Length: 86
Image 1 (cartoon, rainbow, N blue to C red):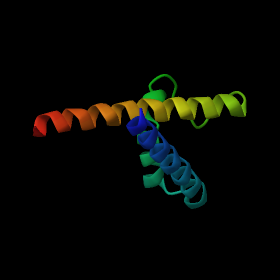
Image 2 (cartoon, one colour):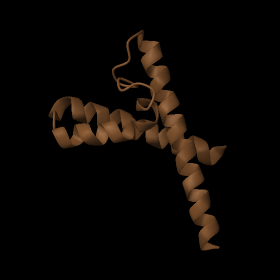
Image 3 (cartoon, helix red, strand yellow):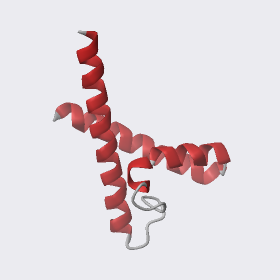
């Protein structure tokens, strides 16, 4: 659980900093990276998690859910790589 928490906080901070940076630059390449970063939830709806209609809390919930999915993916990927190397 400690490993998941570290990955979760790291990804969340990266996502927040990246979104703030994108809002100031308006670069198309950075927008593409933003779409890739939001991939797990964008499968459900293309507006998720950044342009979700609803309250601020709903948007925050979607962002946290997206980061949780990504953290689980990173944990699984690192465990698979660790098992292959052993």
